[in-house]
Image 1 (cartoon, protein in one colour):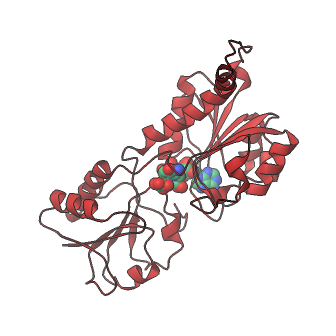
Image 2: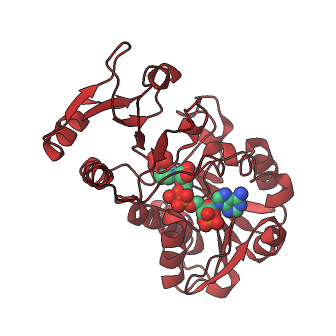
Length: 306
Ligand code: NDP
Ligand code: OXD
């Protein structure tokens, strides 16, 4: 069995070593143009030339949860794309979102500014029921985030394509129920995959349906958000702030207004990092399962795009 590894913007050596150790019977190698074809591949944002040079490839293992970069390529109809299925990302995402939410709700930025000036001053406690949180996307990561938020006793709403049921979460589904979800939400968390249906979903028309004084946390993909619409709604006061981990262009260009906006907190696409050891163990486990003819979790539906 041959396994090609093709990672854009990542060091390939530790992945080669880890995969080889986990699958000692396989030949694991780094792809370079002209390399021999493989049975399976482990990839992050590979070029089209990689796919075109792999006529016999059976499985493409993405070392992330989001497969939008792969869905932009011309992929053979027979090629199975498999995403990382949590692999340690869900708990990181829950930490990140709860941190951003609680920092906003408890006004920790304000306290930090006060104490930096030597001021011992209190703010009026806020009422949790006035800060309903809405999570767009109730998949592997969104469901974990929604439940983590619910554990802090915030009212939680969720939105998915097909109906879901999660304890402690008021679930909405489909385009018809999006307005009710938005109208109920004061802190919006985006955990949708980037597909043609979700690109630009966070735009003036939708963000203006959030409750006044809303806060936006985008941890999915930059292209879910229309940047200028966010800026306009922050200026108008309908939105009071945003925490953004993902951007249309990454790294965020130095002259982008998000860098210095007083109501925007940014982080460099770090809310849930791929953990190498967990990911290698998961991918190796799935390759062994496929060899035994068993089904694996995380297979992407090319028609849905996630
Ligand atoms: P999943 O595929 O497990 O879940 C996707 C969820 O979105 C599902 O609930 C799905 O609905 C819903 N959804 C998809 N399309 C629509 C639509 N058109 N309308 C309404 N709901 C929709 O994804 P994950 O939870 O694993 O990950 C979500 C995204 O998070 C990834 O695609 C990636 O872009 C991003 N991500 C970001 C990271 C970061 O570091 N910033 C790290 C990891 C991931 P249904 O349940 O009906 O299928
Ligand atoms: C992912 C990511 O999709 O890191 O896993 O963004």
